[in-house]
Amino acid sequence: MKSIKPFWFIGLLLLLIQFSCSLPENYFPDLSNIGDTSLWTLHNRAASVSDRVVHLDVREFDGLLWLNEYQFSNGRIELDLKGKNDPGKSFVGLAFHGLNDSTFDAVYFRPFNFENPERNGHSVQYISHPANTWYKLRADFPEKYENPVIPVPDPDDWFHVSILVEYPSVKVFVDDSEEPSLAVDQLSDRKKGWIGFWVGNGSEGYFRKLVVTTMK
Image (cartoon, rainbow, N blue to C red):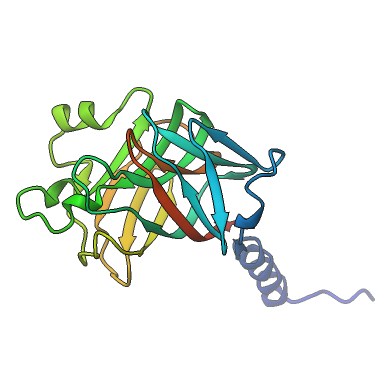
C-alpha cells in the first residue's frame, strides 16, 4: 500500500517554498569600479572615486551615474549622501526605475534648506522625469512631493538615506528615524529600471555605502 503524506506536511512544504521565494537579497555594488563602462554609465558629469566614495563634479544641468548592470524593481535602497550648505547649489540624491538620462524617478535633497526655518519644507523632493519635474509638482501639488527632513542632518556632513520602494509607494527615511521624511506614490508607470547617483543643476555630490535589498 502506498503511503499518503499528511496534509499538514504538504502545507508546511508549500509555506517553506513561499517563504524562501520572498527572502530579501542584499546587493553591494563595488563603487571602486565606476570607470568600468560595462557596469556604469555616466551622464553630464566627471566622476571620481577615493576610498569607495564617489564624487560627481559641478556642471550645468542634471548629472547621473547609472549602475547599468542591475535592474531594480521593489525593495530598499540605502546609501550615505553628502552635499553642502550653499543655497541653490547643492542638490544630491538617487534615481531609480531609470530608462535613460531623461526618464527616471528620483528622490533628492537640498541640504542648504535643512536648517532654514523658512525653507526647510523644501528639504527632500520626489520627482518623476520627464513629465513631473520639481517645479511642476510644486506648482500643481504644493507640499505633497517635498517635505522637511527629520531628524535634521548637518547640511555639510554625511547623512544616511533609506528609500523603500513598494510600487507605487515610495518612503524616504533619514538617519535612524523610524518615521519617513517623505511618503508618496510614484507618478510613473515604470516598475523596474536602473539605479543611479543623481545631482542637480550647478551642484556636486558625494556618495558611499550603497546597498540594495530586493525581494525575489
